[in-house]
Amino acid sequence: MKRFALALTLLATPLVAQVDTPDVVIGDVLNGHILPRFESLADSTQLLANAALDDCNPTSESLRSAYGDAFDAWVMASHLRFGPTEVGDRAFALAFWPDSRGATPRALGTLLADKDPIAATAADYAQVSIAARGFYAMEFLLYDDTLMIADDDAYHCQLVQTISADIAATAQNILDDWTPDYATAMQSPSADGIYRSNEEVLQEMFKSLSTGLEFTSDTRLGRPLGTFDKPRPTRAEVYRSGRSSAHVMLSLQSLQDLAVRLAGDNADLADTLDASFVRAETQLSDLDDPTFAGVADPASRFMVEVVQQSVDGIRTIVRDELGPTLGVAAGFNALDGD
Image (cartoon, rainbow, N blue to C red; front, top):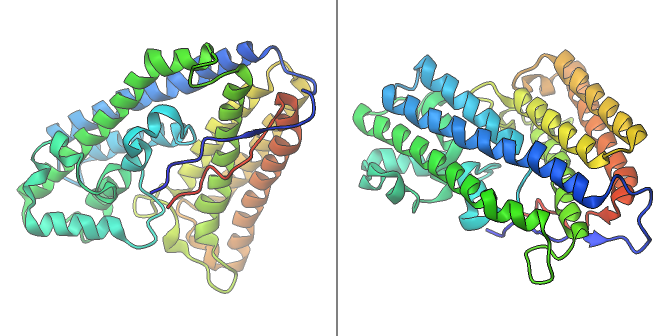
C-alpha cells in the first residue's frame, strides 16, 4: 500500500496577507490541535484495552462505550496523516477503510475459524494483515450479526482483547514519536531536518486540512450516495454501529478547529471559515440519519447532497483563500491509497 504523499507545492507568488508569523501559527496548531488529539487517542485507546479485559462480551455496554470513545478520538485525529502515523502504516493499522473487497470480515472469519494462535499477544498480532486490525475490525467483532457470534467464545474474547491492546499500543507509539521528537522538528525546522522551513511545516498542516475535507466529502459522504440510480447505503462508514453521520460531524468539528487556527489573526477569513463549517454541521444535524440509510429516498438523498455541497464549499474557501494567505497550495492528492 502506498503511503500518503507528503508533498505540497509552494505558490510562485509572494505570500499574501500572511497571518501572524509562521512560528506563531505553527505553535498554536501543534500545541492546541495536533498534540491534544494524539494524547486523547492514546488515553482513550488504553481505556478501551482495559474495558476489553474487564468484559469482552460484544454486547457489553461498557466495552461498546469505550470503543465509541476511542473511535471518536481517532476520527478527530485521522486527518493528521503524516510523520508518526505513517511509520509502519500505523494509520492503516488503526483504520483500514474503505475496504471495497471485504478483506476485513474475510480475515477475521479465517482467524476465528482457525483459532489462530497469533492472537495470543498484541505483539504477535501486529504482524497480521492490517485488514484484521484496528477500529473497523473491532466493529465487526462487536456489531456484525455473523462475526460477533463465534463458535468459540473464548477465542472471540481473546481476539477482542488482543485487537484492543494492539490499537492501544499503536496509538501510544504514535504519541511517543510525536513527543518530543516530531513536535520539535516541526517547531524547529533546519536545513538538515525533516522540515527545512516554517513554510514546509505550514504546507503539511494545510495538506491535512485539505485532504481531511476531501475524504469527508468524497468518501464518508460520497460512498453511500453512490449515484442517483444506484445509491449505496451499505457502503457508509461504520453503518453497523450506527456511527456514519457521527463520523462526518466529528471530522468537520475537528477540521473546523484546524482551519480557524491556520487562519491565525486574519479575523475575516477565520469568521468565514467558521460560518461555513457551522452551516454544514447544522445541515448534517437536521438530516437526522445516523447511517445515511435515506440515500435511497430522493428527498433525504437531496439533504445528504446538500451537506456534501457545503463541505465542497469549504474546500473552495480553503483552496482559494486560506491557501494563498498561507502561501501554500495542495500539490498532490494525499488520499492516494493503494
